[in-house]
Amino acid sequence: MTTAQATLAVALCLVLLPRAGPARRRTDPGRLGPRDRGRTAGTAGVSWNIVPGERPYTVPVPKLQDDIERICRLGLDSRTLRSRVMARLRRDVRYDAFCFGTVDPWTLLVTDDVSEGIPPGNAALASHNEYLESDVDKFADLARSGRTVGILSDSTGGDPRRSRRFRTVLPVIGAEHELRAVFLADGECWGAVSLFRRGERTDFTARDAALVRALSRPVAVALRRACAGTPPPAAQGVPGPGVLVLDRLGRTLVANETARRWLHELGTLPLHEVAAAARAGRGEEAYLRVRARTGRWLSLWGSTLNGEPDSGASVVIQPTPASDITRTLARVYELTVREREILEQVVSGRSSTGIASVLAMSRYTVQDHLKSIFTKFGVSSRGQLVARALDLPSGSPAAAHTPESAP
Image (tube, rainbow, N blue to C red):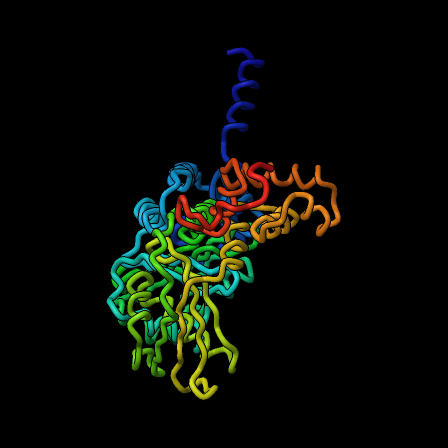
């Protein structure tokens, strides 16, 4: 070997040998400790800052996100959507039980739930904790803060016994570990989920939280769209209001026949939600809009008995006012603020000329906005638009007499 060749060989060895320096801590992303904060989630993967100052360790998750987004694009009804999402999520984030609810974005009350491993009759206990007791990771807090995901053990500083929910709700489920998440789109919450694990299993991890957090928007958008997916039943007369009286434990004391009929469409969860919210409202009435399992929109009003939070509550159930349905569907179809104003005028029966006068714009501008609204609602006439905006059954005569059949 010549001198030049020997020199080159030594140089190559120096390049290939590991450099001296502090040992790097290699951490399993599923076992992150208190120092492993600052994780982020994106569409290409989930990252954790393993050691402060070092580059984040990233685990690609395009498969999970791609699968969930594909499910979200199928146009499924809300309950089927939630079941499919949970079945796919389970392959990456293990759980023993779950409760996945839809949320009214205005009130942040849960309107319906799909669950597994949750004992019957748990709704009253869970609602009582959610609205009447001080605790960590409330769904409303996760939504308002934008944090979106919380692990019970993390939120209690490593001592979940500090949580009232850990002491009262989780034992009924047979669980000791909980992960909670909300699903947000455009600043609005459309769903919330609780995942549970039994005590013999390991706790939820930062990796689990990041995986769920990355799904927030696609799932929220799909839940929002599903609000318009189930056609309501044909109108067969409008029954009177349903009235119920519940005691402080959520047990029904009195209910008329109409209330029992509505509960058959709703389930009991919305009833307990609005009753607990009313008792937490310091005398204020609680209100909740619900898309029933039949496709009908129903509203619940809850108020305390004698205005005392420690007393029971009365709940009134009846079909949702048309104006509330229109406002809800305007958000579902992602109308702009100006488009919402024009839609309200169309539903009230005004012509394009009348709308232009009321909103101080030209008739041509009204026409342009209407074309956009027609496209978003997937309709081609004002009659169809009114029927869709009021969530009327197909072929309803109520929308047949609207000024101007086209934009």
